[in-house]
Image (cartoon, rainbow, N blue to C red; front, side):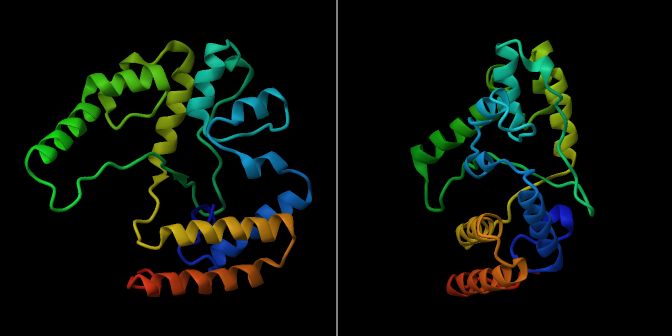
Length: 217
């Protein structure tokens, strides 16, 4: 959301981030954000959409797969997501596998073999077909079930504007600050600028403790 409004998620209180949280606060106050959104996880959207406690939900690759299996997907419109006033920005999720420094010998060989297996065309095709996971390989989409082609077309459009989370040592502190911002600004109705200024200072201190350059360049 910060990026879509021209903000930087590592700063929290820049103009784009302030505008983004002001917009969310307005939506919340007008009753346009479901309270369930505060509890949303990758596997909750199916129940929220089916129960009509939500009408718009993210995490749609997984959700689309479930609805396709239930023969309900045609009741929903699948798209690549919204864009902010500055740009579209869709966070790319997933896990990153890495080999720690100093690992060698048979352990390193086994780790590399696992990475090669996971990145192979056959494995990626299976993940696309069975889990509806977007693939790192463009040649893995031949196995997309017909019912989910609309979803995977939307995935490709979303990935064109995809962004990765910043790779900084204090990212956990940033996410904690974001969660607190949502609680205080949406649920309690606290002033946006006041909250974000305080949380920005907390993030800056966390970066300093970890010896990171801040503010980020």
